[in-house]
Image 1 (cartoon, one colour):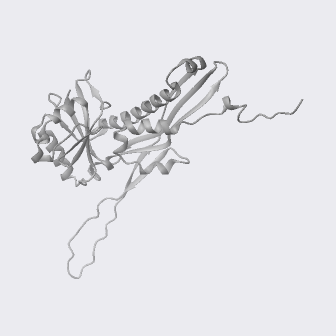
Image 2 (spheres, one colour; image 1 turned 60 degrees about the vertical axis):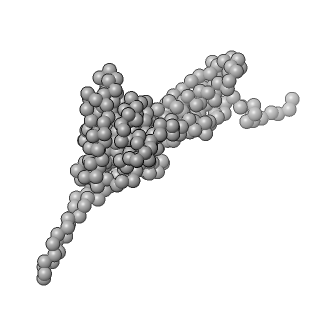
Image 3 (cartoon, rainbow, N blue to C red; image 1 turned 90 degrees about the vertical axis):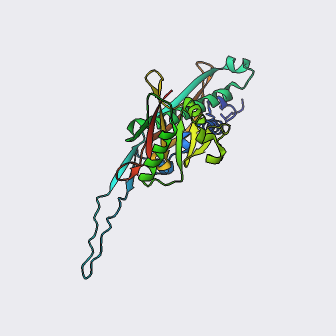
Length: 286
């Protein structure tokens, strides 16, 4: 009897497959917030660690120079902001061989897309939940978003020297409709026209790019939405493990096990009197 080796062919059922491309595609199509916040700090924790320390510089005092006198040197005690990587989320399914064999569509690919969507939704949900820590609140619980509210937001940003580039507004579906009912937003001579047809983006107004998402948090039995206006530097997303899909074969159940996971952290970066109020929580009646 000839000798035989175990090869990748004979052990195919035990070799995990990675469907990262399909999962990443699903995630990219569904993410709103994650594409609008800082992500540059992820490289800091790719190999080890669970916390990113973000240092910042305060403004330096400006004084009057008098003749024949020495200048006074500033000595600020600089601070830091800590972002903790503490969210390890996953989604998993077990597909029996008979289900795979008798399913007309590609059942594995279908569940891969759904896992990707689930992970994307969780990331966006966690970022939008940061509204609860934002120090500035505008709007009313008794009315939808109004033009006055948007002007208040613009004034808050301007008074805090928030850069005019990369200002965003993310609203619920009901508030999207409310915005499209504001004459000043939809009139061409005010804004160049705002269109609800471009994916999650519905245009711009008062220097803010506007997006909508069903992940915007709601409270009081879904009667109040907590929308966010912010600059890109207001929030950060740190990913230590990028979204991934892994599979293995389970002999006991004669099935493929498919698990998707992601390891990340979210947090506020700029929202105080020192760094500037780069975010505004907008409450509104749904």
